[in-house]
Length: 278
Ligand SMILES: Cc1cc2nc3c(=O)[nH]c(=O)nc-3n(C[C@H](O)[C@H](O)[C@H](O)COP(=O)(O)O)c2cc1C
Image (cartoon, rainbow, N blue to C red; front, side):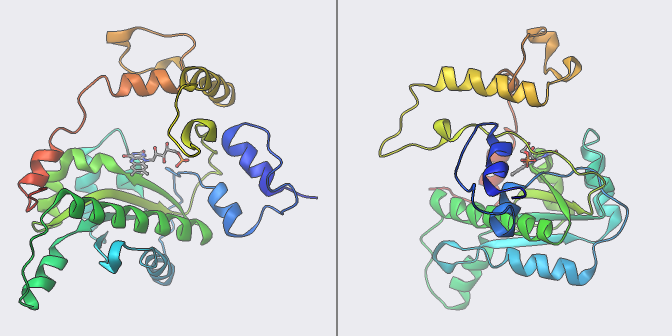
């Protein structure tokens, strides 16, 4: 038999499995298991009807209480896209992508609905903020899956939130509307690669949360991941602070990443952008 779902699961985790051995590697499950972020694109534009299909699929994502608190800004203005790319020069795929979009949580619409219906709105809470963020995240994921089904590749961009004040001004995001992530979209230039995930033994718990085995499981994951895609020495983070570590690995990389304050501007922005977060 040709490639099976089990093969795709093995590719994802680098661990043996028999689950899905009798199923061909095709259909929605194969699509999800084959996901890969794409950062290099052919120059071909994304046709309007293809975009319309992917947007319709994105908006088919489930939504908390059917509140539908997502807003999507399709950045058609190449000047605006170049401006955003210019803020983030170490991610040239932002300016180069044939299509750039921004997925937003939209809390404003619900407040307007309440106003239009003349009803009170005593719900300016952290929970409502989270509902909108989750709705936007689900729509983002659905868009990516649909885009991949249509032969496109995508790269979400949370780094736009480093520049959230400028982004909100550029895209005229009113109070109550906040960016969750940008999204680069285009036809991929390369096959790309499967990024090895943490094993389900770390991320999936049964009946109660249990992370007692984390250190050993993490060490094994680091090793599997480096064996598949060794981190080049020049890609080690913050060597001026931490020097070179051998062997390097995912856990060292992520610990180094979060050794530096990241995006502390976002909380104050959100609190000043129409959110009480009670
Ligand atoms: C919400 C979100 C934000 C992301 N932001 C960025 C980003 O700013 N720049 C980037 O190059 N990749 C970004 N990514 C892509 C991740 O780096 C990528 O999903 C991760 O490395 C796993 O790789 P994979 O998607 O190929 O499996 C983001 C992904 C998500 C889900």
